[in-house]
Image 1 (cartoon, rainbow, N blue to C red):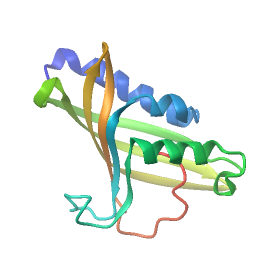
Image 2: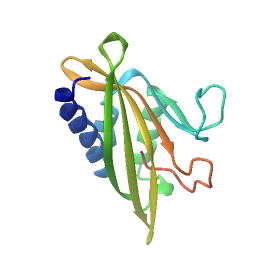
Image 3: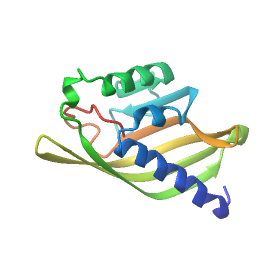
Amino acid sequence: MTPAGLPEIEQFLFHEASLLDSRRYEEWLRLFTEDSRYWIPSGQADADPTGHASLVFDDWQALSVRVARLLNPAAHSQTPPSRTSHLVTNVRAEEAGDGGVKVNSTFALFEARLGVQRCFGGQCAHLLRRLEGHWRIASKTVVLVNSDGFQHNLTFMF
């Protein structure tokens, strides 16, 4: 990925973060390809989601069910809904096969709910593909700094 193309990739990641922070999960889901994977490993060194326990390992269909549950008024785990603020930084990109782009970034996420604020940090790895002139997420891996610690109510999206 040339440095000239990096601002477009950064804007895509910032847009994704904005959709999550405004709970526009259906729009966020449309950023994903139909063959996508969304993975949050439970360990820092996990390299294969099929060989390790995961906090989340969803294909597009499972991710769409997760989004529907989050948006359902009966979702007690999100009553009241979390307020989040995603910060995305240290974006690096390199060409991948088939015209895709591997993107690595660092994130901080602040969540406020029921009078408690929590902070999460870590690394994201996206595989992006350009489809019909727009970037789409073919895979997203979120490695939390505290992935091996206690995770209480991760019912929002990273």
